[in-house]
Length: 481
Figure 1: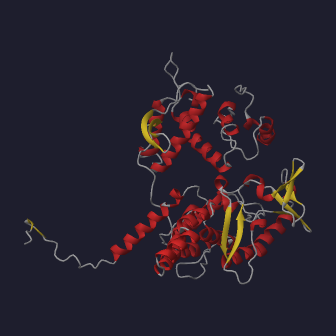
Figure 2: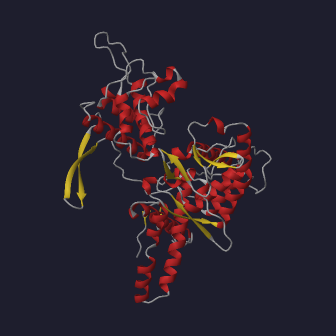
Figure 3: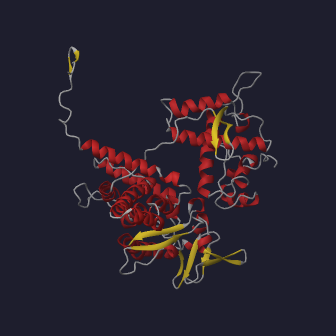
């Protein structure tokens, strides 16, 4: 593809941005990178339309963020020099990056006192992203050399046995982290009541609380900690995925569609009925008020290219001359999905802002940040982020499942235990399905958490005087007969 001409500077006319992107084949919701000078690099951005085109949008966005970090560093901190005068020349681009640039970037990201000092896991992810980008760029003959130095590593292939391959030398080499951030139920409830609902540590409403939509935020966090859905998954739910709270049920079933689940991991979600009732209360009160206000102000009339469900009993929209089920719509399409009703259009999205428009994942992240700030202001150490609630669901659920599983097995003989295992399977695999993990190896992380918790409990039960005399004196170790 040819490089863009100098007039292809999209920020020169921000109002024409959508039209410009459409002309250049950039799909709605597809990320793209703009240089600090406002230029759109066709070759750079073609990675999103080719090799990443089938990847989930949140994966594409994560790649864009990781690339942006390194490219900004090149632009602002590693400008080229004029070989004749020695003066600073044009900013350095991704095409001129060198191993020296990568070394400087690593120092700043991981060790510089003025830098962010990112975690090893964050750095390894960024290295992997940039490395894959340059391998792709080399394959497309866009650059000749990968600025990331490679080293030879030996891996165990289940088919071919031990073999060697190249890997980035600048990775941290510390391996994946095995600790997870999670909150026990009591800690979660304290964080929610103070941070989300605006209560004080004494359990009473705080007169200083100025937050709005507390019922919505509380229902959202409760749903996440009781189902383990990911941020993007839960934020993409529509009214069509919200089950009814039928009498006599302890848990209501709903289906998370493949189109919104990470890696197409659509699955059955079990929602505790008390939590579901709180969600429906938000829908019937706060959400309804937001929709009515948005209609009155004409906000839905300004939505660009809305997708409209004409019949509430048929969850489908017309796309390209054919009916497409709502379950097949991706998150970016769901944000412009509406339902035609007697009073007019209404967003199909479950979670709406005060303006009656769909909440974004970044909006929910801000809700969690505000909640953490309130907890800190009240002197509480409880902190949470969306994935911590998912971890909390996993740890608590696995502990409860294993407790019941082992209790049942303990009351059986060997033949009964074998049959029980064949029929009901392994609690870890059940949790894997609920979390949408491809491999049980990923889910085993929570077994490690339970092991650590068990050991901490046992250590806490050791009496302080159980060791007796230490056997150490100022003269050295005493001989013990």
